[in-house]
Length: 418
Image (tube, rainbow, N blue to C red; front, side, top):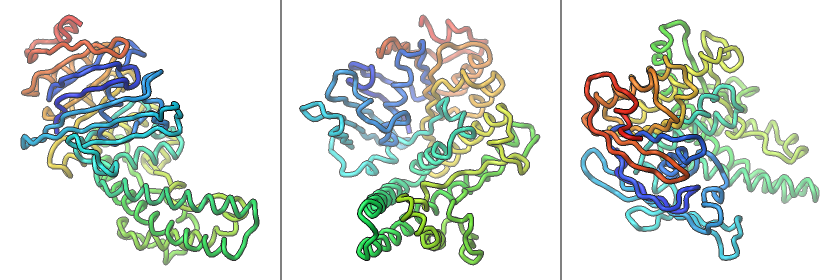
């Protein structure tokens, strides 16, 4: 997949911009606060139909604007193309709670966000991903779900179904706490619990199965990156399994939705009195986490900063490879200022392990040292020309770059006049 071009209007600090991208390396350079990340966020939004930075889509509109628009042209390896679009608009009275977000495929509105998934597959690596192991469980769940959505679009629907059921159950519990537990409320809770077990079982099955696939590849990648000093393992930690009966906890097949639904159903029965008392949903995928271990020790608690960053690097490289196998083509790779947080050795390791056929979008404040050399090697390995854009206050000055010679690169030669 290659992103051919992008138009953005009143998106974040981008007033009105149309860009054409290289099918190879695309460099976005500029000082902090100039809009480098906004450009990658626009691409991400069309790929995932969600922002990686905020859940409040009102924040995506330029200050003072009532509407924002994005459109992009995507070309597949076979030469077929499609146009993706997104429109965000406020109601006439500027009520942020009434923001309408709609998506388009080939200029036609789509009924659901999931209809857009798979048309512009990407793997992203933001600097916050380096905190994957040190962040809260919610962050790891978001990372895992975003990766699975690109790998299997059913996960988007499963998550939406589960979230709808959980919200309905939460309302019931809150109302019961205020008005008292009636027989009707208990009957309704039984219905919601049954639906929560079924929808949650589908979420857990995809999570656990994907993590098993990713873990096998990431373990090899980590061993390679660390010269075999430690062994990386990971597994899905289901909160409902903590005190599950042995017979119920048999998960020889992590993709078994029925087994997961049974586990959740039994946990819901055990925790029902506590849920009534606390008026909270205490069982389900929203409570789960991912465990990472190095030589059997919790990598979140005991891993050094360097080890944790190597784990994050191994995860992203493995995510990229796994998705490419699934698609039969390379997704685009979004690298947002991660180089500033990686030491020179890891910068080179990341760039040098990329296939020359991958379309890369890399933001950075400046190119120097090993990063400059590694990007140059990637550009020389690719048959495609590269492009560079200088970000200044939401505007992007484009500079097409000629194929790079085999001679060592200077920053001036690489960015030709920026």
